[in-house]
Image 1 (cartoon, rainbow, N blue to C red):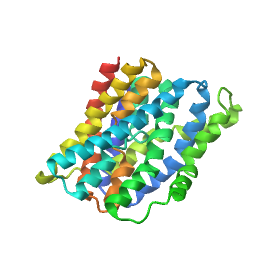
Image 2: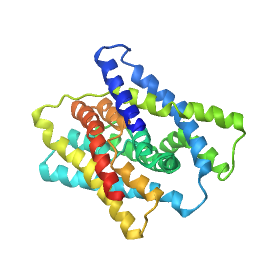
Image 3: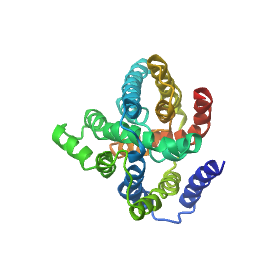
Image 4: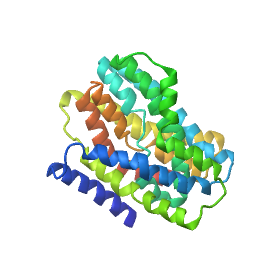
Length: 299
């Protein structure tokens, strides 16, 4: 219960700070950068070495990629069926597909499944969502936003120099090993900042306004992200007979809110900015309820 209070409190605090304009508009960016460059790498370095090398640790990224590709196909089908504009389709190809496995997923899923879930969360995030943002996300932006040519070498470079991914590679070296106590304590202190900073940043970026004409793509997007995506993950786990912490983390992560960065990227590229922001904002709020339903079914 304490974890859920922390989630609700810090998220609401961020929204209140936004409404009272306590901080400058670029404060969410600063907080996000600290989480990405410091807090998240520390958490990865702290948790990944606790895993034992096995096929189980690769269940989350496998499910992540199947869910994301399936969601992309569903977005295209619904978009063509309901005749969404090209800009709206491009927006949904980002916010309906990429999951918020860091800023909402880490605090939410660890609250439900405990700290043993964190290492698997990192696998889902770094080998799934983060790589997808740099590769799949770039392709979507080029196709729908006309932002230039796809250069595979540049996409690969972005992935390889991404601080959390670099931390993941380094952490693999220490699988099954322990750090010196001083270094572990420092990592633990930095890693503890992930949840409060990530959720305050999410609250600071929350946008709730949505006109009536955008309700249909809004419903399709959150229906795919919060309902269909976790069902696909559950089906995969049932097919392969997976019933362990790794599969439970993957199922819950698949049903998390849309990725905040995906919404920001869609908005900056002119892909239905107002709709993109609303889907992310409401998605975070709705995920508080949908995650409880998912947790009920997997337990």
